[in-house]
Image (cartoon, rainbow, N blue to C red; front, side):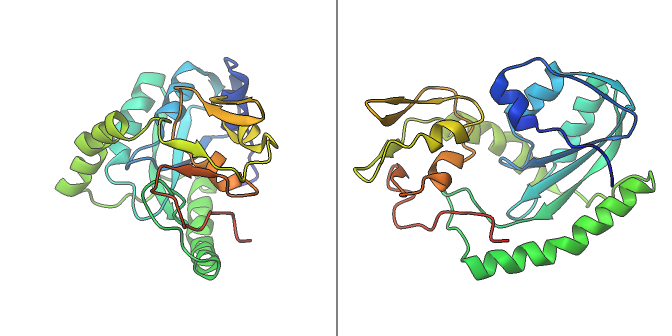
Length: 227
């Protein structure tokens, strides 16, 4: 679209209260966590001061679909006095290794290639100033983005199952990768605190595959962008 880029991750990691002015519409590109945008991203949007253009678009990468995420984004926009311009999803390779298998490199490449025209169409709609096309939402979508999302955070989103094996070399890449500064090194081994969002950056970025999530990740391929 030619709009300027702003890293939400960097802002969250710095724990800064951001102030953003944009003459162009706001376009939020975020992952899907249990059929909604991540809580940590929603909290960042709510705490950030936005001035200028109030139109807001949302693009969510996902392994399958984004459920009824639009309902919650529309409410977020009302709360922030944004003009909600719609939410669309782009299927990308699955990387939630705590629960799913990661596609092979070749499969990942094909998924990314197939996403290219979808991204181009979304960019075209945004440049033209129109609303994004949104799918019809069914009962299953309501459940996934509602009660299932709530249960997901209550039952699964914690760092208690992360562990490190003897393959760890104490490089600290996991510390740098964590967007919430939830990891620190002690005796050159990572320790997880209690502020995890389950982004899986630590486990996928580890160069020696020394990080596991209980037994759920053992033997699984780690995800890295294939292109």
